[in-house]
View (tube, one colour):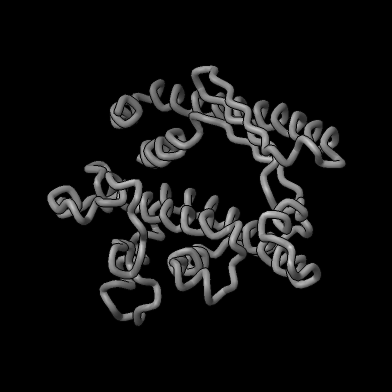
Length: 259
């Protein structure tokens, strides 16, 4: 029974390791903050147009902040609309307004349009119970962690942009953004399980003074990441084969992967 439960939990992880993604950034400082799901969820939930003004988000970053918030909304909508999810809601499928974020690329997330549970409600409220349920979902947490890491980098870059803007009044936002070369992704590699490899390089890498060093670090990171990724896949396969040998019923795994 315990082995069966372990393999079942492993199936959720398998669905998330079908691709390897390596991002290389240059940061002004390394943030050692621990990932706290509720705090990360709250901080991203609050992002909207008024938030950008109140927090003095630099013009060059505003669309990226809004996209971060919209991604969180979309992740939630996908869980609500997935019949195999513990958070599945039939109302989500029957009401067009509830899944607008999945069908309307122009939708602006706001207090009026969001479907996410509000983390600022009282602890005893039904809304907070929904937040706790959401933060107990492994798939959502993995996505939330990544979004939190991106927001941390964007927050750091925003501080640098505002400081640079204060030092050089009169310069355009575009010029300031071009001058700040930290806290941004310079290189990204995605390796799919079927063998497809996608490389993306930021335009700013072309004239970066340490371009060759950054690209070499990225290359080595991809090689190391690929070895670890393949090792993890091999470990997962060994676990599944062991379960099969013991007669464990894992038909649910093949069903989920097929879908």
